[in-house]
Length: 535
Ligand code: G4P
Image (cartoon, rainbow, N blue to C red; front, top):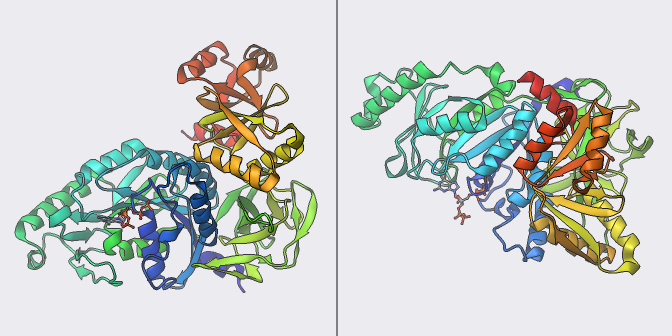
C-alpha cells in the first residue's frame, strides 16, 4: 500500500473536556456517524463514573473496559479516523496529558452553561505547549447558557488562543432555533432528536436575504443579522494555517445529545484537521512520509489479573509502515524487539494486524521492556520529544508496612510508576515520595502493590504544593541550592533534581534568592524553553 496515501487518510485526535461537558456523548455520536457502533450507549461504559474514592474495584472494572476503547478507529468519508480516548476523571489527568502527545489535533468540548472550567484550562495548556490544533465545540445549546459572545471572550482570555466562530447559534435553551453556518453559508434548524443522522443545510448565502424569514421568526432573523455583522467586524476570516499552527481555534455550536451540529463539526474537522506530519525527536525532525518506521509508547495498560501479568503498550506510529513480526530497535535498551501480535482497535473491537501506518495507534504486548516515552525505530538512535512528566499536585511518603517484602515493594512501585500511575521521587537516597494529580492514584497503588506484588504500604501526606525540575548553568549556585534546601529536594526517575515548593510564595522566594536557577514545571526543559522563546 502507498505510505503517503495511507498517511493522508489518517486523522488521529482526541476529544477533551472538563468532566460532564459532553465528551462521551460527542464521541458516541461520531462513532454512530461512522457506522462504528449501532446503538447509543455503547461508549458510556467507557466513562469513569463519579464513584466514591473508596470504590476502587468499581473503578478498576471500568478501567478494564476502557482499555478496549482507548482507541476508537473507524472509516468515514474515505478517511481513517482514530479517536484516542482520554479519561474524563480529573485524577487521571496525567494519562490524558500523555495521550495528547500522541494526537495530531483535538476537539475541545465546552458546556455553554458553565463556560471554560478548570480542567479545560489545564488541558489547553498542554495543547498550547505542543501547538496542537484545536477545534472548539460549544455544547448543550438546548440549555439556557451564557451569551455566546461572552463565551468567545472567555475562551480567548482563559485559554489564550484566538477563536473564530464557524457556526453561530440562533438563540438558545427553550427558544434555540439552530445555527447559521458561516463557513458553508446556510441554516441548520434545530430539532430535538437523538437518533437522526443527517441534517440538511438550507442554503442561504446571505443572511440579509428575506428567505431567512421563511424559516425562523423575524425577530430571531434580525438578531442573527446583527450578530453576524458584529462577528464579521470583530473576527478575522478563518485562517486554516493559523488553526494548523495551533494559534486559532474555529468554534462550533451545537447539542451533542440531540445530534445537532455534530455532522458539521465532523465534516469540517475532516476538511481542516491535519493528517500525521512532522514529529520532533531529540536528534532530528521525523517526517511521517519517511519509509523507515518510527514511533513511541505513550501509555501502558497492565492486566490486573494476577494470573495474566501481561501489559499492553500503546504505540503511536510516527513514520513508515509498522509490520508484524519485523524486528525493531528499542532505543533505550539498545536491543531489537519483535511483535508477533500487534493489535488494532476498531470501534469496540481489537484485532491482530499485519501492518499499520503513521497516525495509527497499536497495542503491543509487553512483558516489561517497554516504558512510557520509549522509541522504536529501524536502527536509528531516536528519542521523540514531547513526553514530559508534569508536576504532580499531591505528594506522599511511601512507607513499607512489611519489612519482609521490601524487594516486592521496590519492584512494584518501580513498575507502577513506569506505567505512569504516579511519579516517584527519591529523597535523601532512600525516602520514596509518590506524586500524583489525584487522591485516587494512592488507592490504586496501595491496592495493586498488595494484590500484584504482595507488598503492604502506607502513605504519609506531605505539605508540598508542586514539584519543579531545576537546572542551572551556574553549578555553584545549583549545588548551594541543593545543600540549603535539602529537605525540599529529591531526584526523579532520571536522577534529575526536583524542588518541592510548599507554596507559590516559597517558589517566588526561591526564584529571587537563586536567580540563576531555572524552575521547570515539566521534566522536558527544552520544550519549555523553546516555548518561552516562541512567546
Ligand atoms: P463527559 O464525557 O464530558 O463527562 O460528559 P457526557 O457526555 O457523559 O455528558 C454529561 C451529561 O451531559 C450527560 O448527562 C449527558 O447526557 C449530558 N449532555 C451531553 N450533551 C448534551 C446536550 O447537548 N444537551 C444537554 N442538555 N445535555 C447533554 P447525565 O445526566 O450526566 O448522564 P446520562 O444519564 O444522560 O448518561
